Amino acid sequence: MDYPGVKEFMSESLYYLSGKVYLLNRPKREEGINSSYYLDPKDTRREFEKRGWKSVIAFQTRNPIHRTYEYITKCALEIVDGLFIHPLVEYTKKDDIPASIHMKCYEVLIEKCYNKEKIFLSVLPVTMHYARSREAFHHIIMRKNYGVTHMIIGRDHAGVGSFYGTYEAQEFVKKYIDKLKIEPLFFEHAFYCKKCEGMATTKTCPHFERYRVILSGTKVKAILKQGIKPPKEFTREEVANILIEWAKKKNE
Image (cartoon, rainbow, N blue to C red; front, side, top):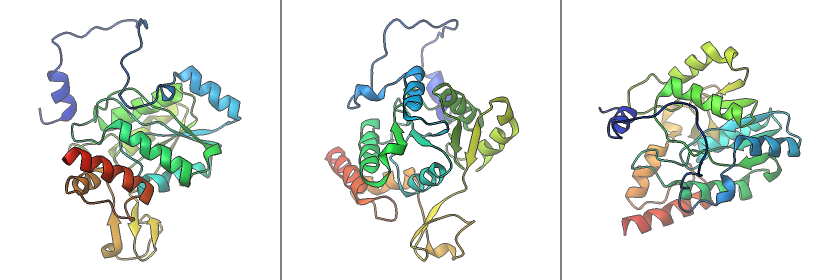
């Protein structure tokens, strides 16, 4: 019962229905998110075609984009025509930063720090189950439906706590990816190196661990609870301002 997915499932109704699905009414949308971000797969496919993108890489996230995410998405963008930032905006974990705040962070970063012509932002209205390997596969299937050709798989994709091994999702995807005919892009753990004065991984950084600032969504939430503005090594000033403003209002 400590496992978030099991805990959520067991707290739901006594009954579940299965069978062919018909759309009767659109589900309620997350408050504070512009309805234009809620697109069906046919809509995103049409948008990619309109932009002339033959290769599109999807980025799955449930947190505001910090330095690590910015680093891997920009690396990924070097090998494809466009980047599809596609965050989950339904229930994740109770201590997560609201999806509406995530979206503000994505918007300001796209405006200030990315080539806007190469980025497309939409939302995925599903719930996280933290099922690591199987959920990573499920995320790939969904993004393939949305029209992407590539997908970023991080070191801790859909993981939680100590229930899984660090690179378990990547190993699982490598084993079965041929069945999906989509190209995964795997990244190792990235960090900010004070000696390099930028983002790096163990593949690129020669310096000792004491110079490395390890970044994670969990750490930023802990910082915000203390009313502390995230440092530049964690995220850009524009994003830090949005997060600390939200945290102060919440703490009040």
